Amino acid sequence: MVSRKTIASILDGYEDIVIATVCSHSSLQIFHGARQEGFRTLGIAIGKRPRFYDAFPLARPDEFLIVDSYADILDQADDLVARQAVTVPHGSFVEYLGADVFAKLRIPTFGNREVLRWETDREKQRDWLTSAGVNMPAKIERPQDIDRPVFVKYYGAKGGRGSFIAKNHAEFKESIRPGMKYAIQEYVVGTRYYIHYFYSPLATAGYRLTRGSLEMLGIDRRDEANIDEMYKLGSQEALRHMGLLPTFVVTGNMPVVLRESLLPKAFEMGEQVIERSMELFGGMIGPFCLETIVTDMLEFKVFEISSRIVAGTNLFIAGSPYSDLTEPGMSTGRRIAREIRLAQKQGRLADVLS
Ligand code: AMP
Image 1 (cartoon, rainbow, N blue to C red):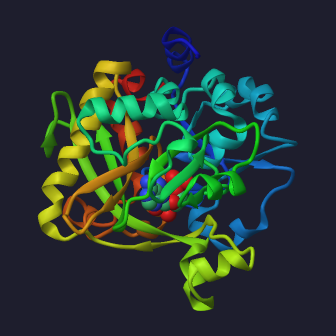
Image 2: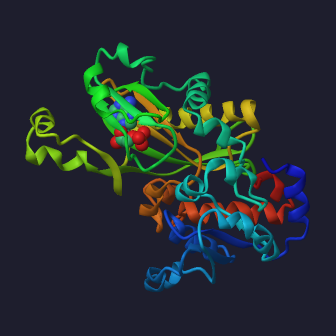
């Protein structure tokens, strides 16, 4: 992990920050939001400059840095610092670079990178969330103990790829890939809500926490192939006999809202997760997402946390039914830029960057 001292000394030389991220995932939104807050922007592209940015002039970065591979970003750290870059992490950036490498990147980065230790290891993630008081789906310790439908997932966020459902030990053995670390959870039946929060350690108004405030910027639900459309072909059981198993690869997102009576609980969960993160590792900063299922008893089960901007926020570049009630037109990308700007004005960049 890059030390706070190193980042602070780099920041000493920064006057005109450039917001940089890898051209993928939620980069259009991040660049668009940064520009709205008056920042210059830099897109890191792998291989060649992506052409599709030309179609979206309001979100096209001012400059590109082309690298041969994700690993090469590490070698470009000095160049990025010379350009006064602050990187904004997103799912693809961290996943493809590798959490370990990302943690060591000597470039000021939005958020607290200590969170990676708690997020990438599914055991630690469960400790964090459950010790915060958040409900999670029950954990099944051993495949032999599978006595109800379960959901099996591998370590690392890969857009749902590889996850599978098993209703017994035999089905588990049929689908498990050898040599990969996995976790088994009870399969929770209900409806999914991916809640986009933003925690600001700098805010002094709004939904106050011990320190700073919590905001809700939107909620989405993911489109997943092939599970979402499989029913058109027949029952999952019938399809299983034909060798067709459901997959959970994220292909897009849809906007949703929660029934209003669930909002107090949604805020309470966000609050618990943040307060606990302060005790465990100095606090998660900025955008995060609780991936939840609401049962017919109106209970939330949180099956995963994502501790940075999620791609579902791309729905709300022009605002959401929630962010419209704090500031119309506020996207998560713009909110990140706003926080950096505020920190810069208050001389507190080290409080929101790591
Ligand atoms: P993940 O691999 O955690 O991103 O999850 C991929 C998909 O599986 C999402 O559609 C989730 O709703 C679903 N899912 C994950 N965990 C569970 C669970 N414990 N019960 C039911 N569905 C789940």
